[in-house]
Image 1 (cartoon, helix red, strand yellow):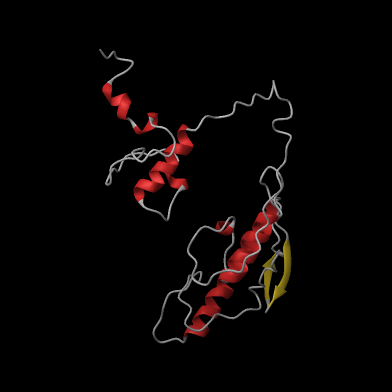
Image 2 (cartoon, rainbow, N blue to C red; image 1 turned 60 degrees about the horizontal axis):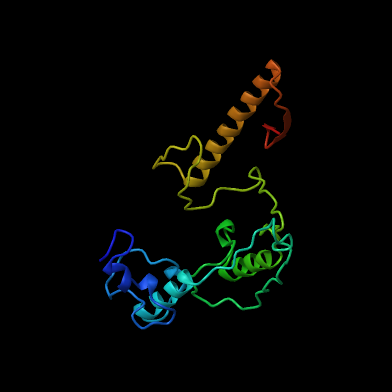
Length: 202
C-alpha cells in the first residue's frame, strides 16, 4: 500500500533512477523545466536531459566553512583564453556588452583581454584608452547629416551648410548668454574665449 510519502509515480520518476539509466530522461516534446539542462547542448534531447539529471541528482560533497576553514582558500588557476575571433560569431563574449563603436575584432580582443586579467572576484579593469573629445567649434556640419541640429528648421531656398552653420552659431550665442547670466547671478558658470567672434562657455 502506498502512502502520501511514497507513490507508484516516485518509483518511475527520472529523479529516482540511478545514474546513466536509459530511462532517466523525459519524453520527447516535454517543454517543462529540466534542472541544469541549459548546461548541455549539441546532442539529442534525451541524452542532454539524462546528463543534466545525472548532474542534478549526483550526491553533493558538503563543505562547511566552519568545519573546513580551507574550503574556500583554494584558488584555482584561471583559464586564459588564447583564440582568434571567428568572423560572424554571434555567441556570448564576456564583457562585450560594454564596448561600443569598435570593430568586431577589436571588441573581441579587448573583451577577452579584460576577461583574462580579472581578479579572483571576477572584477576587471578596462584597457580602452580614453578618447579625446571632439572640438565641435572647429568641425563643420557633414553634408547630408540627418541628425539633430539645434534651432535648425529646414528651408528649401537656403543651402544646408549655410543654414546649419547659422543655427549652430545661434545656439552657441544663446549658450554663451545663458552662461554669462549664470555667472552674474553667481551660479558658477565660467565664460571662455570667443571663437569666430562668438564667446563660448567653458
